[in-house]
Length: 640
Image 1 (cartoon, rainbow, N blue to C red):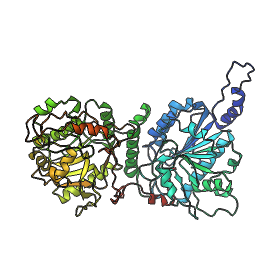
Image 2 (image 1 turned 90 degrees about the vertical axis):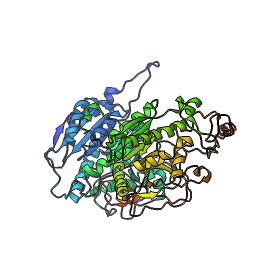
Image 3 (image 1 turned 30 degrees about the vertical axis):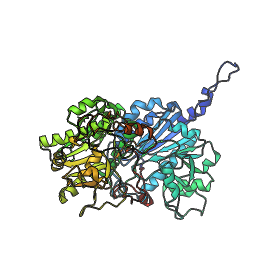
Image 4 (image 1 turned 45 degrees about the horizontal axis):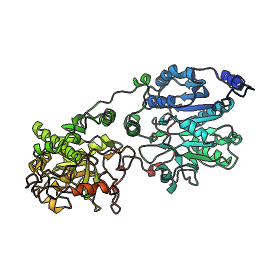
């Protein structure tokens, strides 16, 4: 940071110090009357933020920072920014113009000249000069907080989204000297280490994943926290904390010039424990870019991943109106397909709204396809549609006949197949409305499509499903992303070709109906029930699956918020005929199966998580997402 710094918004540091000294006199009241309740003010907090090339994250970062449920007159903001190549300073100024008066004080200094340091190869290159600048600035922030007698300093990176508004209050209430809220990324990366090597770098441990996956919940002593760190300055030993190597005990440290490592070792040498807390879902974190990676490429994809997670969890993300103008609209397309349909019940507006937000975020041009509502079906309506049921069909788990919801689900998919043929749509993506998109969805989808089109011969490609066979699924020759689909449940999302739609229609499935996720495996001739399969002659559907999958359900059976419009709907009354039987004849569905199914509430459902104890697990991200191996890369950085 050079000497040409500008000061923006808020009182000068001397004024801030004077006010902090006078604050106890101004706020303390001596009361002798027993009827008056005394109120103790919350501790003062200085939030320290370093900003560089974060124009894509700042609108969300500031929106969530402003939403923290903590008195703003007990918070001071300390912000520094330099060497930007985007609109970071403009966004910060715009936000501070509206909010500065709300906070106790604001200290914002920046370097207006744009461009990277002369010694940097790229804006993601970390060299000694850059580390030295960050160390100097963080030390300055720490000293400023001490001089203003702040009770806490909260170091916060500008690509952190604190979605839990109670984060600051909750962390302060933990009464810990140094604590970090555990943050979630689009992979295995987070803001803590559970192990450190002898040369001061990240070390894999079993505990890391246990904490990250909430298998262990609590406050955990760890050797390293970073990115979002709350430090209690009222503890005397914290006077020994430092970011500068020269301030460490002489002769003890021989590690790298790295701000977070030096800070962690200063805590270690001072006997101050560091903790990570995963008692709540606090928020989300971006994975720092490696040298050579770019903001317009990798970082924008990561931002999309994180915002998609937030939509899944909360239904939407925070974006203040005055910051929304800095967020460009995402252009929409159909992923090079003929069309994309989303099946959604008209009465499930909340699901539709959430999916539309995903489509806006991912840039997907999708048509809402009204689902056939099982609640609107009756035995008479089903019969009038010409529907007959497959002889001997009973749900494999509950031994019951089909539900009206399952009938409506089949008809919804069937209607899309019919429309494809009528409109001559060559390739269509069919989505249901209770799905979550895996990270890097667009890039992966294009990879799957490129392989499928190059190899050819496919009729259907699962994007999301539940595998039911333990055997390995063979990779499609010449593909990195496709396997031959085995017996599967769920129709979360799949691509179907025009020829595939024709094959599914030619078998006239409404005359021998069973659930759609039983029908598809029968049609690609990979179903364990030969009796059912024997009713369908042309079982030549060529079905593949993306590997890894690109879609998963938002909820599983037993999860809070789990709703099934198929499994939990009204069942047929047993008077509808199966094929080859008149109404009331020998082909009648036995009513006893309905009562038996209702009694077996502990049995598994189709909505249960996939359980294949002997099946080899597929790669989590196909090399695109972040694995724990990536955490070993030295000097992952995200600040200036």
